Image 1 (cartoon, rainbow, N blue to C red):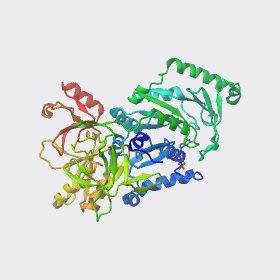
Image 2: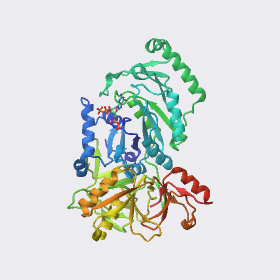
Image 3: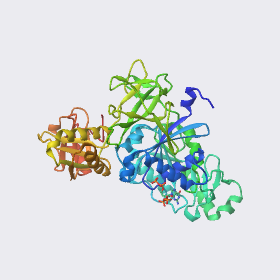
Image 4: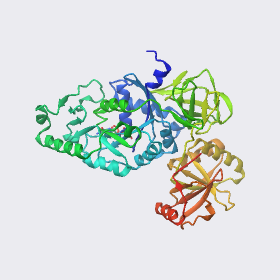
Length: 529
Ligand code: G4P
């Protein structure tokens, strides 16, 4: 079907999936693809393997080191919608990139394991969603296993994350006793069956709450419990309010079991209705409408090419307005010159393909000759503008870098600066001590290994790392004089490469203490680039 540009943009939904490792993000993504008809039905396992393969194939480095450092972007079609899913890497390869991916999404889906509730990584990613005020949807997964009490799960989200919740459906039992979910809109129960694994046609049986057969099906106890819970919910729970959802202040909650394919399509359908096509983005020339005729995009991620012979990279762009046309040149605003965005590519379900057209909402990866930085804007507009910058996220692990061969200072600085420019690490120096030593900060410890490996492999520089005990970094807002700050014994003053002062702390309580001791001091967990 041919769509106009406006229709193409309107039918786009671009969202990130966030979760703690093992909550079921991969399984849920795979089931979405299944509904989109992108992977073959016979093999849901195969689908998973293929998806994983595609992700880990993206860059040679991953094969070499057996780790996945890439977050992937998948595009698929469902019911007339064109959906872009931004996957956020989890596990030990959690990095600043994971946060940055959220800058490119218009909404987020949070997957929570029903037996675990909110976990550490979800909490961190959630903070970024809140900062951006994007809608957040919750999928409480693994209902086919023994789950925590439903009200407790909701309380946990509200207390841990500080967002109100509104259950769209409500589970009846869990684990072996999982009977299905009650849909609060249609007042019907969708009966659980695990025979739908890996298929999309499986019959879902729906029974009205008023149907006497329901009591028989789920048993008197479960029925009474459901009635009681619904009464409680209607009395005390928040009501659905699209405006609050859109503002990221109310999270619609769904229950299901991704593995058995239960509740996934209902979730997808509601989600698509409750989210919007790409919204305007802020720039230094005001808001840029996605429907503007001019193409515009910003870089949210840079991926190094591990091939030593080419020090080229892939820059990932989020398109914010208009149409991307591979045959055209676009202005790289920060670089001040026109550039052809060569080898544009998109991940489609399980393959990478070269694209010649893409629309606002889409993500493309383009060849970066080493000139682009995170946050850079590209546009075809006659009057160039820059999109609002991407913040720097707080690293949580710090180490002092020791250069083993001190003769290679220049190479070392070049290497470490380039790697920092890609955004996997942040580098700092001692504040006013005259020492030239570099302190490196990372979000996930794996990045320390990546740094060591890459400096050695690509720049021929060997380094040693001495771990530092700091875990909290704070940017100083405004022009508060750092020399006047009265600190705690565990506080350290450092500066970034632009000479901006920052503070490091071992304990989070010292952050509060320093704030108490210094009137007017404002500290931030996010920095500006
Ligand atoms: P992640 O991407 O969030 O890390 O999680 P992933 O989907 O890989 O799921 C983690 C494990 O949880 C997998 O099991 C997966 O099969 C299982 N799982 C996902 N959703 C459900 C669910 O709804 N119910 C149940 N019971 N299990 C679920 P695994 O044994 O670690 O991997 P595999 O051997 O299945 O590949």
